[in-house]
Length: 117
Image (cartoon, rainbow, N blue to C red):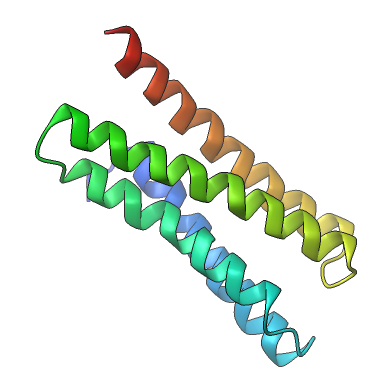
């Protein structure tokens, strides 16, 4: 893994946080449905970033980034829903929302750069 690939590092770190949160939600809160949705979308961001990096063309790279962006949007939704249904407290949710919003900004900037070049 390249040390200077910020989106790769941040998406992987976010995936770890999501997996940790999933384990907490199923064990401590006995919540199995919403947490599974977040697990899928939250870990998919990094997986699609990895696929984008290994893309065979510029078009393939952009397509995978677009999927990663959509998964980040979905993760944003599930985090808010978990917060608003009292499975996450405000501070837990805020940290995760900040992380996913940062990923959205970075991915969006990369997409914009590709579109404009």
